[in-house]
Image (spheres, rainbow, N blue to C red):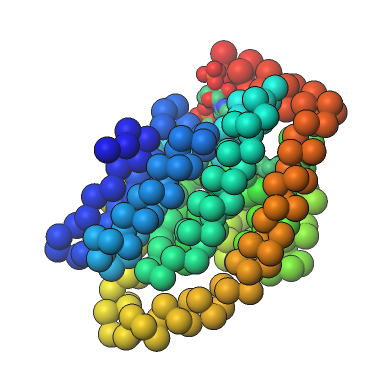
Amino acid sequence: ESKLVSLTIDDKTGVSVLSLQRPPVNSLNLELLSDIHNALTEVEKNKSRGVILTSQKDGVFSAGLDIMEMYKPDQDRLKTFWTTLQDCWIKLYGCLYPTVAVINGHSPAGGCLLAMSCEYRIMQTNCTIGLNETLLGIVAPPWFISTMKNVIGHRQSELALTQGKMFTTDEALKIGLVDEIMHSKDEGIEKANSFMAKYAKIPPMARSLTKQSIRGPTIQDMVKNKQADLVNFLQFSNNPQVQQSLGMYLEMLKKKGG
Ligand code: CO8
């Protein structure tokens, strides 16, 4: 039983809730990513009708990748870390069951990637979401970019990515980065269940084959380039200038927290 996520199935709705619980900010380290992957595999077996992805604690959905994994890294662990992230995305993006993100807090970078990989997004008012990589002096990998394009389109993705833009909840709703707004997690879960209920009348096989068909090319593209993507990540994160940027960013985060 994992301590970094909890997976509970609601017997009434048949929908599973997957909660991230890695305090303080659910930053995605190797262990959390691996627990998410395992939980998604578990859902395939427990026959739930779908998954709601959320954070145990309101305020932060996920702070994205754990920068400590990339800063002055151990090379073997860095490799496993990236491969686990790749596998986690492949699993979440391609899973046959419906997925909804109940974004009950801020959701930068890798947090935004997780949310965008779901089929539907409901977000807490007065929070922020986006791929802010360029702000950190790093570059979102091509499959992060494809995932975003598939949600908000080429033009909005170009603007958002080059600026490292963090959208407020209202802005995110306006451009379709999220689908609905919530005022509390309970309301979000309710809305997520309403979304799931839409599939009660849709034959699951037709649904899942359609999802596969629409998402397949994006996934195949990533899988084809998986090794090159890893090499690229290793090279990039070991670049002294990138290390310096990450170090400065961490420093800034710590100062801010105080
Ligand atoms: N990784 C590691 N530590 C983090 C991270 C993170 N992503 N985010 C926050 N922390 C730490 C902080 O340093 C702080 O540590 P301490 O307690 O020691 O001071 C602690 O977590 C709590 O953070 P805050 O005080 O900032 O908490 P708040 O509730 O005030 O704010 C936020 C929460 C809004 C999530 C804020 O922490 C934040 O903006 N974090 C940074 C998010 C971010 O920019 N993430 C980018 C990660 S990079 C990524 O996901 C994609 C990389 C793509 C690959 C690139 C190839 C090289």
